[in-house]
Image (cartoon, rainbow, N blue to C red):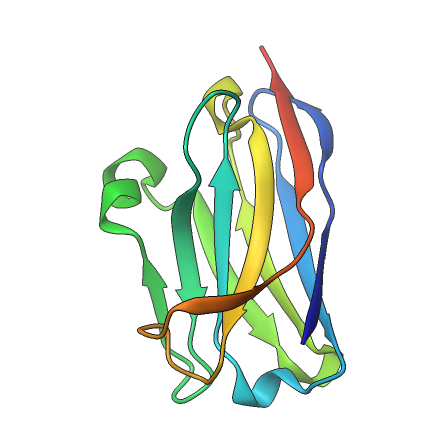
Length: 124
């Protein structure tokens, strides 16, 4: 499974951005996809996951209050792509964003495959 995240860039506070995670070598119908991020000097943290089993989406508990609905995960299996839609970006959202997949369709599985990240920089 090869994953490639894209869509990052330099944006201003309050901007909207959509990140894409494209899979190659497999069809995403059989894989859950999670989005993670790592801010400068901080540990990597999970954001959200899209299950392929029933289409459910999950958001990290630690993120729910901070995100307040600003980030949503969605998938388009026809395009073999999972998106992270981000609204009202803040400087604290500056990070390298990664997508990852486990060996299966459940978000409860450990992530095994990691793509190269895409950098999002939010200026104040």
